[in-house]
Image (tube, rainbow, N blue to C red; front, side, top):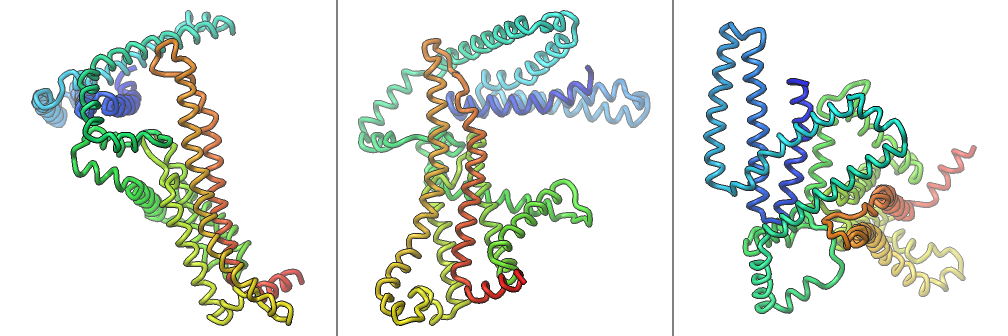
Length: 444
């Protein structure tokens, strides 16, 4: 162990601080969560400055001017950090800040104890036999459940149930219909915007975020895609590697797939739109699997918007490629014989209704599958907690874990289905005769 050990535990400590801060903000209030986060950050900065002090005192430049300067800067930063800590304790909850401060220290102690235990001969002898190792794993699980149960009891005592009950009763008395409306229907996992809206129920900005949370998540996913694209193309190399290689592989696969359906003449023209559509829908589908996030495609407004864009673009392609007369001829079923002309009064309404049904089927299919995934995860999380309810534990069996992997598969499949159907809708609007000539030329 040593300085390298501190570097290794820094990332684990940061994750632990963020998780505990989010949990505290959800169940104890936003002020407590913020105090935990600031206390954890203060502790991590303190450990970093201690590391620099040790390097300045024991490094090769400790007796030189450079080492003395580094030592002085580190000492001044420590003084400033202690002043910031005093200000922090006066502005936020001291208990929350202390809890956040102790998290990195607890991570260091647990990690050091784990390394010492796993490297000892006693541990090797204990886990050599399979039944003994299983018993140790079971005992560790029971200890973890007991610890989490204790934390749950402390949380319940610190959350002031009396004040919450009074607030709930007052809210029910003033707005009974609104409360009943909020409880109707299935509820998804709480996301970060929901947490903020519950923490600041009277704030206008919280209502704004909650009202437009689907739009904000959709824009944020789009921003992440643009960021990844910018990072991948920032320094292009002739022989790609890393992120550039991954993005180019995805683009090439989408290009081959779409061109294989639309043909070499029209395919490259529509690859940017259809490829972006697939990546955007896939990212939105998978975004809800991240804790405290939400899938925008689990909202019908988003899927209807995507389907309408595809519908309008497909009609525009038909008008541009076929012309107005050819477009109407396509909707009429391309009548060429007396019998087909006689069937135009029947075929034209059927084709029009078929075109109008395409955005409905696209939007409802995507919305139903992604919303169903979320509800399935919620149901199995609730079932896992209910299974161990007799133990009064705040956690339960992770019954939702297999369905997380299933959600990864179905999210990808739904993005692919949406893109394939959109590509086929474009294909149906393109001139069919030219496709037939191209296929005949490839066959020869």
